[in-house]
Image (cartoon, rainbow, N blue to C red; front, side, top):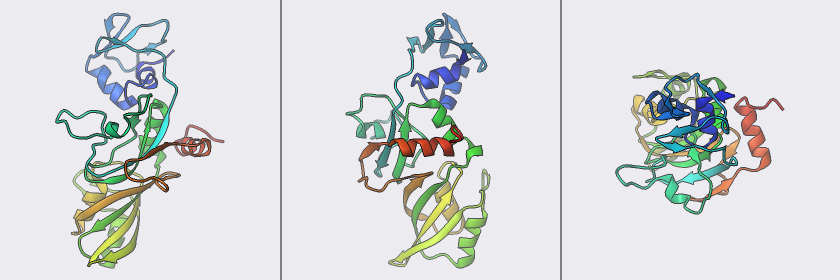
Length: 242
């Protein structure tokens, strides 16, 4: 038997954290009884689990995709306002997958999608500190001490940022491009870090996540992870020691 939220995530309902919210909201029944306790344990095949009245079944085969998200797309499955989402780029995909983390609507670059709830949970858990690298074109050229401040950590409204790796990549038309590597996943973090030092982001691209890069992918394209990439990613996420 396994915890209800883990079973739901494995069945492709949503990420484990999102499944916890769904349970807490009273949207799940087990054998006809509403369940809101996150510690509830179930066994598919013996127990009948329904989400919003729809029965969930055994997990789909896990799929792992690497997508180059273009600007102007939401990193969500649906949007009530009818805006374009990453699912519009995956219309030919038979399996259901969900984004691991997000990229801003106006940002582009690497996005991992999967229906592996355990991997999603591990990759987004702060303790594993999976690194993400961005190229940020900013207004103007920051002084050396400003770059050093970004690297050391800046105080944002939700607390100080962890140390980061920050390098000056180039300068074009009077605007610098910074290569920034962080391991946190706060909302709009890189943009807020740059705004803090007085150099707002003009464009933002994520070029790496852990051992994965967007090399070879054009905007809007995706591919499946190969065996070696997946093995290394699971190792980074603490799911494999080999």
